[in-house]
Length: 70
Image (cartoon, rainbow, N blue to C red; front, side):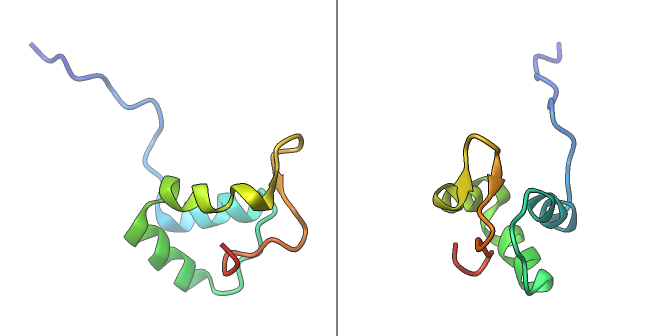
């Protein structure tokens, strides 16, 4: 009777998501603030603001891209 589709991606905490952004080259000067922002507005919504700061060919952020600029 369960017609629910299981999630394909596992849950990631705001700390995990900050680490992922940093691995992709984004500079995060204040990790605590970044975690709070991601908890408030969601990772995927915030990530849309990062599109201008990302090189789509390499899938990495430009060297001067910071969390605060987004």
